[in-house]
Image 1 (spheres, rainbow, N blue to C red):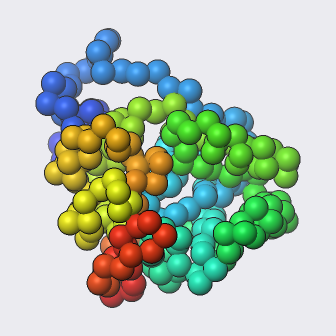
Image 2 (tube, one colour):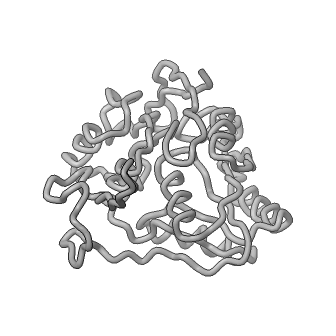
Length: 261
């Protein structure tokens, strides 16, 4: 980042969750004990890419990291539930559309019942090819079976499979998301993993600390322990206004449905 006086600083992502690290370390940084090499999948792509978009923190950070890696994410793809809301998240499709507009991106929303998900996903890949999209960006972290399922189908459709966050430690994803200045709210929690008292809470260090206290919860919710809705941050032309409904119980989750304000 650049100060008002024109000086350049690098912000340490780990400092957001670990006090051992300086927020703005003295440059150059020749060695850092917090550095972890990643195995992000960043193939060369000739053309624009789409982003698999849930509206939550991982897809948001994946899009940002794709941008920083030189990709051109011009389209967001939202595989919604049959009713148009984001399944397990409870986020209204119109809010997803407003996210896309705030980010200056096109949006392709694909409603799909659970039993039709694979067929609809493959139809969507064909539509991306017809639109001239060269690759698809995902926000997977470390679940190899999930990553392989998407990679197999994406590659078979002739699209590059891009995973900017693959291999990142969950703590690093959280730290980078918070350090970047994104703002998100917790919209759903798995009923046997995360206390529903956190529904509607901001995704911040207090929430992260509560997650870290439980050994059976992935810090990023990679196994579906919780879901978020991102309403502001880098790249957003304006915050996305939203309102949360009363908590409901559905498919093993407590959800506060998010609707346009």
